[in-house]
Length: 102
Image 1 (cartoon, one colour):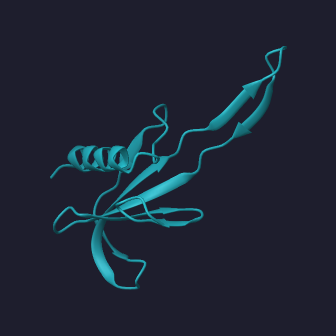
Image 2: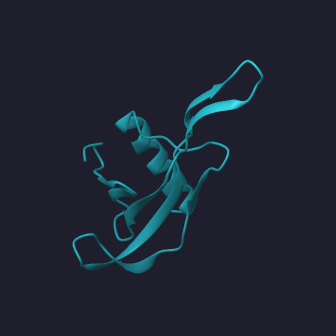
C-alpha cells in the first residue's frame, strides 16, 4: 500500500466517524514507516498520518473584523505497517478510537 492509499484510507475512516475532519487547505501528510512506541508502550512499525482539524466558529463584525475563531488542532493517525490497520487517532485532548469513540 502506498502512502497515498494510506491517506485515502484515513480520509474514508474520518467520513465514517462523521465528526472528525481535516483542514483542506493544509491537507494530510503521511510519513515513512518507523518503529514507534504505541500508547500501550509496545514497539511496532507504524505509519503516522498528520493533519489539522478545520477552524470553526469563525465570525466577523460589520467592519469585516474577526470577532470569533476556534482554531483547529493538530492530530495524528497511527497505522500498523504490517496490515495497514488504523490503530487510533491522537489529539491534544487524548485519543480517538477508529469508530470515533474516546
